[in-house]
Image 1: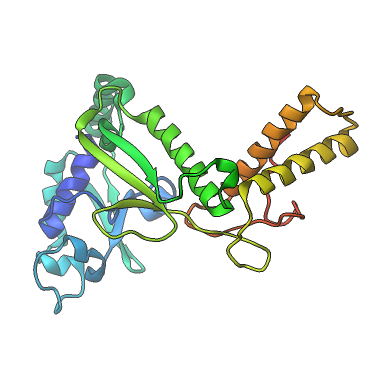
Image 2: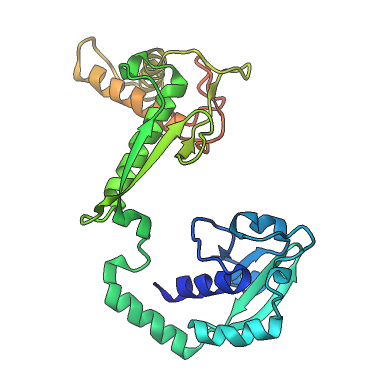
Length: 280
């Protein structure tokens, strides 16, 4: 366990006597460290409910849960590899400023040298990860555009997993991620995919093949009128523009956060569409 991860583990254990790690309630900062500190967490106890195992109806802050004393917390942190230099309440969060000692830097450098390329490697990628979808199993060109978006997200997720998963990942520890148009109940781990909507804000019923063809024509027209490209029927250009049309749709459907709705307008590539403008 790396230095900072060990510190966060001990801090959480001190605050709520829990060793769960499937949450992001204690946040690690990457910017504005001088003003916001190195880590922060919510002060109100209601934000910690999934980690608590006793009645908290009469408690207000997370410090009340284990009757935490700030001075004792600072003193105890000396045993966690990184000590706490200061604690400040900012709005409804607690912000912690950590001590940057020579010993801390030496310990970190030692960890980097010993772990090499695996330093900071997410332990999740030590297990086997598979991605599945709730979309129907039909030819890509026959999918509606929302299910096409799901398939594109699956392809991106598969590529990321293939890139980062350890070659010696454990087959015994398998994780399955479902990509779905609606939230799934536990124990499923899911990635929510927002719908593709038309210019009226209604879920689009357009078929993928039609959108591919429209964007292919958009790219062809741009090449002819803007760049003067002469295109003959049955030439290699046709295959080229078919690929460009699909690339354009892919970029378009990925141009918003996965869980957000994605607006497309078939006959107006300048509305919500970023696909054409992002291709040279």
